[in-house]
Length: 201
Ligand SMILES: Nc1nc2c(c(=O)[nH]1)N[C@H]1C(S)=C(S)[C@@H](COP(=O)(O)O)O[C@H]1N2
Ligand SMILES: [Mo]
Image (cartoon, rainbow, N blue to C red; front, side, top):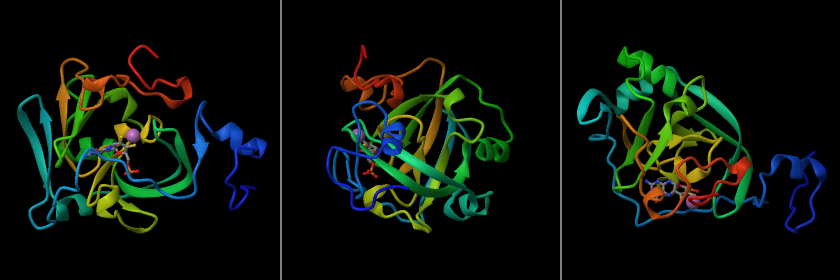
């Protein structure tokens, strides 16, 4: 059983087992971002899948809602050391997106790109088999703009900076290409269980 209202450093053993090294458990939901929320209008919202500079397919908000929706439940881990347990997200898996586009991944890497000029790189192997989604709902509700709504990328097994808010598209790249934080000293991969926070970790 998870202890409710827990705030101190001491924690039940089952909590410790779920916490990656160096993380602490938080009950609230911190907001972290490089600038103000970009304004994203659902009427003009677009999501585009690209192979390098070449567009593969673009979805409107309605088209994205019409794709199969999958629910994910579990824990998220931010590089600033908070972890949050038992979060519930719903959206379109990366697998279902590729199926709808009628393609297989053309390269082994991609960049998630956002409406606020944020980007972050992830290997394609980390996105397949249900490991990532275009999240459209959090806790049964539309995602609040502060947490990246209307749509954010969601890659929960990596540090949360890999889950790009206000997602605009995914761009396949030939090589592993650093995004916003990776250009500023953060790790290219970001596995919380191996504590890959910064370059060289
Ligand atoms: N577009 C965009 N996505 C982003 C960021 C950002 O600044 N812009 N910050 C990242 C970081 S560092 C973290 S920890 C998480 C925070 O998500 P939250 O605000 O929903 O907790 O979003 C990530 N995704
Ligand atoms: Mo972060």
